[in-house]
Length: 364
Image (cartoon, rainbow, N blue to C red; front, side, top):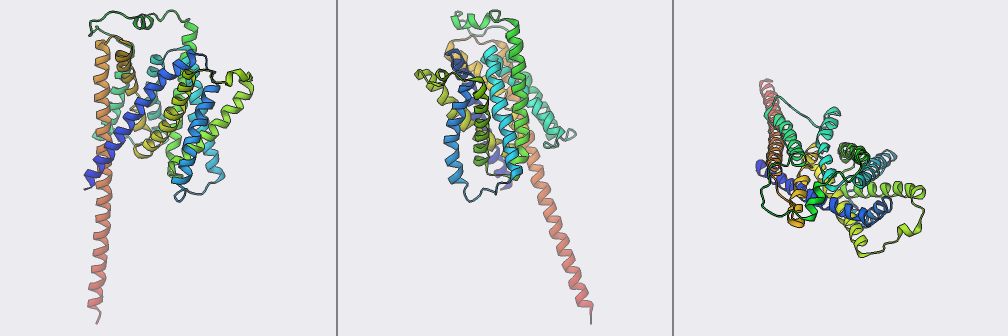
């Protein structure tokens, strides 16, 4: 019965993580469109977080009203720091990096998140890695394989597998020299800051969730403090009132997608996944979005499919399977250890009780 529960929990976690990566993949495209049509890099995240807070706040209040732990000043400080990392720095650096780079390049840079998270979590002893055991080795090897697969998709094209004519979109993709090198350098710097802040947010969130397990409320507070921080930035950076006006349906769609899907849905899903699987297990699924972006580009824009992308997809699949298997084995071992410890305590208690009964029977 215990094994079935473990498999069921892992299946839910797997589906949630895959849905998360679909949302992320779409957000890369939508954000690039938003920047192309001229939405302000400050106004965009402000509206995004307002929508997310409107959706998450009431749900958190009513659904977790009875289960919500009392708030303390220490918790509020931790919520503020989570917002600074997971909302302000994360979203701000991402938009700046995307402005100078491209969605594919941004997606590729995000594949460093698993490695950064793994190092941070291991250093803080939030993730136990028993390298001598097969489950620990599987997690390490799987993480390396997933990152390697996504890197292969990005850097190695290989031979074309689909015999189709080169479209205008393909030509634009091939011609990466139109952007000045300095811009790509700044894109790398900003996206690295985005990856560091994202990894730090996931690592910091794990211990906070143990103290404050009301996940929706935690996410709502994170959005609230992130919104306040962005508004403070907007006071100095975006004083033109015209930049705050939504002037087209396209702008409205990008803002709604960012607020509803990329913030409300993603933050809730990611918080739940971190609570269930830990920060490293969530981060290791990050390379999936690179594969999804490649597939979306094939069907949406008619991009060419290359053997390098196929090889990368195989590596990602094998890597994720390895990590999933390692995590499953780790949980099974934890369950067996707890059951063994409980059995031992029960036997010791029974032996002690028998000893007492024997002593009582020997007393005249």
